Length: 215
Image (tube, rainbow, N blue to C red; front, side, top):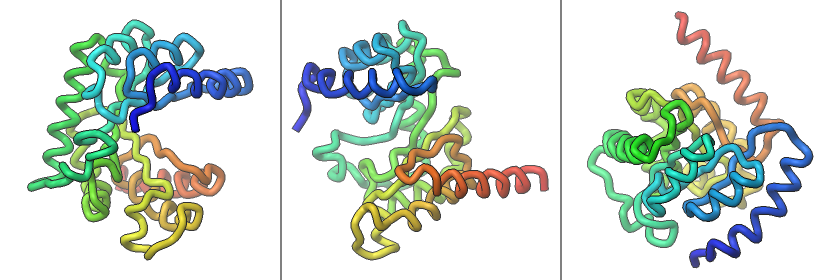
């Protein structure tokens, strides 16, 4: 069910205030709704992560632009309730690139600065397991969009296609492999649960990528 925007704000603000009072770091908040974005940006959030790629609320881009905030645009089709209905691709990488380009143009038209935009291929969103693996393998194709890439694979259900059925907390080794693959494929930002462990993965993958770049 869709959470009403006033309830979303009520849940988010105490957590946001607690975080911003303790750390001096940029804080990102996930929302598709302009009113929620306005509320969290007023309370100190620096980045809005919109899983709909500005496809849900046309006003969200303008809210982010006025605040001078960062914006993450994720690839998804449909809504979380029906997204797998649209998980049909003739050429996954080409279609993801095309649809992210459309989201990018919506953001630019709303006044969001290009340098404030990060793109996310939406692993697990409107993508079945085989699509998620293909999206990871084809990450270099997204370089054509010339924006930093954020990739979130941590503990997601698609990992079970390779690991077998297991609870989310038991998927960290599989997550480690996917994080390394994402970084080697060009990801600039990764979203993870087991931060300490994945820092090691990210540092080693980064070093390999640097060597590959200059070889």
